[in-house]
Image (cartoon, rainbow, N blue to C red; front, top):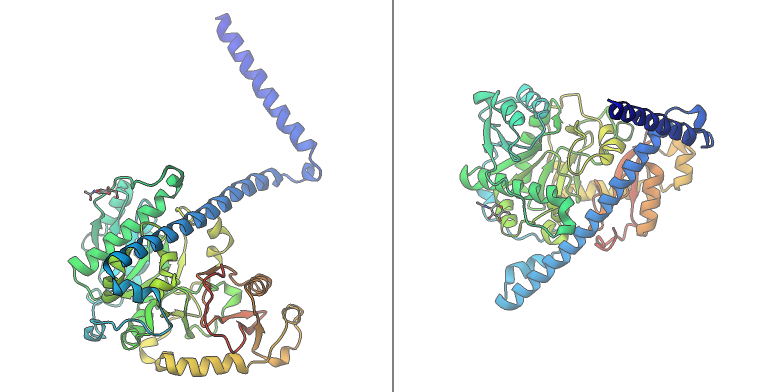
Length: 450
Ligand SMILES: *[C@@H]1O[C@H](CO)[C@@H](O)[C@H](O)[C@H]1NC(C)=O
């Protein structure tokens, strides 16, 4: 009895001491006394720092991974004189290897939507929108590929019955990774899941194309119309290797919401709602990476100078925060992406301007015909009478500085800026069109820019 009371007493003493400590901590901090949210902010900042650190370590691991892959390939080349991978390594723009089966794909081919799911039961929101906007269940069958064995998510998916097809990645075991890479286990599992799902779609079900969507994406009303209309152009243009629904600089104030019909070519692989052809899978499957598959796609060895089509206003947006790679990225950027809400009848429109020759001619003329303005003039809202303007960068550092100053994504993957085409990033700034562009004698990306 006495023991119990003393235990309670000790508890009270500890409780009081702890609170006194917190109060003391708050009082002794300058400015914080009147600001109740300060401590919360501090905690959030600490959490964000940890995430930044994780991201940094991920990049480092990614580089190690890349070099080791290069090294392995070099060894294989020496041993077997593997001429194919050697050709891939010396990629030049627009000289993609001839795509054998591409010419045999019909512009009316079935376009399954493959939803990559794991342990988020919010996949419901993704599926509801897909089913709501889908114009034809024959043309666009929905396949949900589930990894992770999460029961609640499995129940949600199963509740759609025959409306969708539910497949499950069978291997739930951990992937052996070096101990210091354990925190990246999630990235390894995602890469394994993509490989398995794509192999099901193209090898088992033998589809000729597929649209990939993740379980935290919500699609726009004209999502299907968008892919359906551009699909024939992808088939006809060997300089293209994907169609993406995503604009990396798609924040509301940075896009022309009055012109959701605007489309672009981009050298940056955007992912996040994207279509690929079966012959691209033939090419990628044998060398599919163990982790970080999206950044791997962005390397010159894989991209081989090819581009994707992307919209001015995104046709997908991400609503999830939970996930291996999001978090801070979601809070600072993803959640501001504008989801298009006006249906554009793309299939009724002439999209031939997207073809490389024509696009290059007109787009580059537009960009380099625009008067040049300095970042400070733009920020000061000067020379508005000029209309569309161009801001020129010449180095990695000037790109980063100008991008940051104007609010566009300043990161580079294998030297390519997000949403960029031939080094040019197009966006709206204070209501006017701006091209952040290299000099007109630009000759190619420098993969060392990162
Ligand atoms: C499952 O994955 C692990 C890790 O990648 C691998 O070692 C194992 O062989 C796989 N099992 C099967 C049955 O495929």
